[in-house]
Picture (cartoon, rainbow, N blue to C red):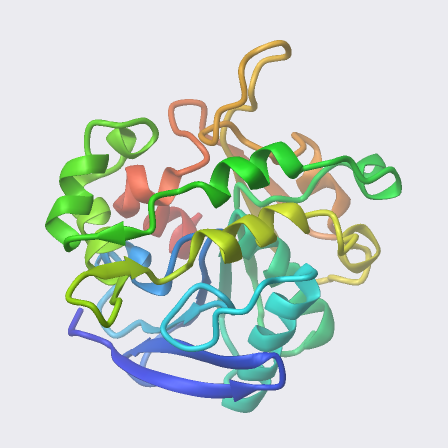
Length: 284
C-alpha cells in the first residue's frame, strides 16, 4: 500500500487525527481502531497485507495521537469522538476492526451508527464479564504502573532498542515495533521526543475502563461479529499485559457472533502476526 494521507477532525471532545489509504468505492472499506496507548500507524503492516485496492481509515483515537491529548474521564469520550468522525465521513464501512480498547469503542460506534459498519471484527477486545460493570473494581494499580512509563526519548531508534528485547514487545514483529516507535513519538520542543500518548493520559484510560457498560449495546448489534481471542491469564498467575481480557463466550452474546480462538498468539496478535490477522479480518 502507498503512504496514507493524514487528516484532522474537530470532534466535540477534542481534535483527532486519522489516516487514510486509498479511496472509498474502489474496494472494501475498512475502519481500524487501535488499543490503549497505541496509535493509528501501528496498523501499517497489517494494512500492507490487505488486498490491493482496499480503502482504509485508521484513527488516532482521542488522547492517543497528534492533536488533543486530554485526560480521559470515561470511554464514552473516546468512542464519542470516533463516532462523530465516522458519521462525518459518510462512508458505509464493509468491516470495522477494533483491538483491545478499540474493540470496546467499536461496539459503541456500531450501536450509535447501526448502518455505518456492515461487519465487526473485535480483536481481543477489552469487554469484561457482565458482573464487572455492576461492581466496578479498582484499576488504580495498573493505572499507576502505566503512569510511570518513560515519556522522554532521544528518538525512535532509542525507543526501539529499549523495547525490542523486553516483554511483551519482544513478541512483536520487529517491523511493527519499528512503526510503533517511529510514529508514537512527537517532538518535545527541547530537541528530544515524547510519547504521542502521554503516560498520564494512558493511565486515565486504564483507570476508566469500566465506565461504559457495553453489554446493553451488544444486545442491539445485529450485523455479523467476529471475535479473535487469545488465551487468558491462568488463575493465580501474575498479571501480564499479553493475557486476554476477553470472556471466552463473548461471541455467543451477539446475534450473529463467531469466535476464533488463537492459542498460539497473545493480546498483541496484530503486532505479532499482522498478515495472519489481516487475512482473518478480510476472509475469516
